Amino acid sequence: MPATQFIVYVTDITRSTELYRALLGLDPDFVTPGFVTFPLDEQVKLSLWIGGDTVPTPDLPRVSEVCLTLTGGRAAIEAHLDAWAELDVAVVEPLRDAVFGPTFVVADPDGNRIRVAPVD
Image (cartoon, rainbow, N blue to C red; front, top):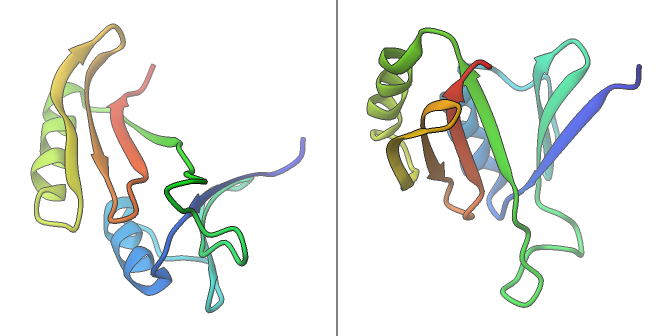
């Protein structure tokens, strides 16, 4: 099976690296001045990229949502929301019950959405 890499476009790689380090509780495994990767699994990475010539603009937006799933039910999800409230994120969807369980969504400074939900 090929490895999978999800790319999130950012405008400030240093700020975003520190934010995602705090959000994920992980250190990056590859760092360059414009591209950073976080190992989520042996075959899965989350990458931050300043995008070269394809930097997101209002006329060429990038829209995606990264979903982090947690064990521990509502208590674990609420604890993440409380901890993340101290970081450089905006809550764009407050804690609510969806068809798959409790969830919330934050946005990083570039508007990238990060959902937290229970493990299916």
